[in-house]
Structures are given as C-alpha cells and as structure tokens.
Length: 263
Image (cartoon, helix red, strand yellow):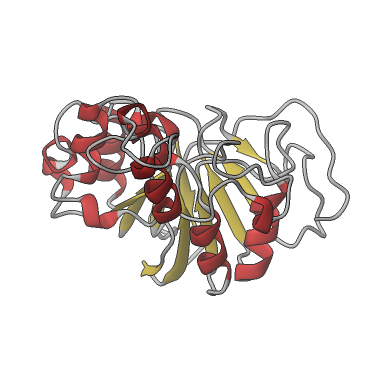
C-alpha cells in the first residue's frame, strides 16, 4: 500500500434511512457482537439489506440461528469467526454447530448481494504462524498437521491430553489463522475481503492482510476485532492511491455498503 500514515481513527458515520431518491445498501457489515445481537436485529428490520456479514467475536449466548431467528427470512446471513468465538465450549458450539454454521466465510469466496466476498476469520498466533516470517517457517502449516502433532504428544508415542480437545487441536486454535487457509484463499479472486484482523495501516495490523487483499484483487477490506469504526481514507491512515479501501467496524456498529448514492 502507498503512503500509509497513522493517526487517531475517526468514527465512520452510521447509515440512516434514505430519502426516496436513494437506494438502500446491499450489505451491512457488523462489528463484533460479543453476544449482543440487538443492534443487528434492529438494523436489519429498519434497513432491510440484501445481506449481512458479521466480522467475528459473535459469542452467541444460544445457537446463532436462535439469536437471529427474527431476521433469517429477511436477509442473507454470513459471518467470519473471531478469537473469542473459541473462548469456551458454549461459544464454539453456539456458532460452529448452529444451523447457520455453514454460513462461515472463512477461507471461502461467495457471491453475496452481487459482490464476490472473501473471508478470513480468526487471528494470527505465533504458535501456529507469525506472519512476520515466511509461510514455510510457520510452526504448523495446517490444522491437520497440528492435530497429528497433538495426537502424538510431546513424547511422540502417546496422546498428551493437554494438547488436544475433542480428539483434535486445542479449542482456541480453531480461531487461529493457518497458512494453508491463507494460501488457498489468496489464489482466488474477490471484490471485498472481510477479516477479523486488521491490515497494516492499523497500529496493530498486519501486512499479510494487505498482501492477501492484493492477491485477491479486492478493492475493499472490512475488519472487526479492534472495536473502532474507522474509514481509513477519511482518517488519513491510507492515501487516495491505495490499492484498496479499508473500514474498521466497532462493536454495536455497522458499515453499510455501497455508500449512499443517488438513484
């Protein structure tokens, strides 16, 4: 990316009900719900977008299809997972084992409301892959390789229960970013990339997200995780010649896309 500057983020304006001369947005991107889905339900009822995408850390208090039951017939529901979605067995099961579990965009490109949308859920963890080092130097190239190591245990001859969960990798690593998922996604094409982690223009972001967006040909990156609603271009964190726009979305807030334009 060109000419990146860092400064205090500026909150993005929330979308309001349009006048008759404006078309409603096609997608609403929601920041980390952390168990509170009231803003999601309210916005969908008011705006009626074609689709919604939640940007991780859903932490549903009951199965996700129950949390979103009032809007399931009113919009197309998608999500990526965040690091807190593996905090407990309940967080995990209420998301991944819900009737909406197959709506996880992680590692996929799906056509949503006319856009090709790529998803990368989870976070970078050094015990799997520190993206500051080359992919081939990652501790584990895939969840399968980590699972095989976990089953062998530290002794190499027997299972070490401290390294396993439900017979596989530790629960928390179900929200770790593995190199094989990242590489596979980078071979695809997309208009929009949604991630939990932020790109490099954020003080806690990663150049690996920039590189993935460029590989995909994405023109927009939308992320959660940091609980900030930020239009990176307006905030001066990227410049007008950036290869893609970036928006961060706060807990309880949303980004409406495309922005309001006259019909």
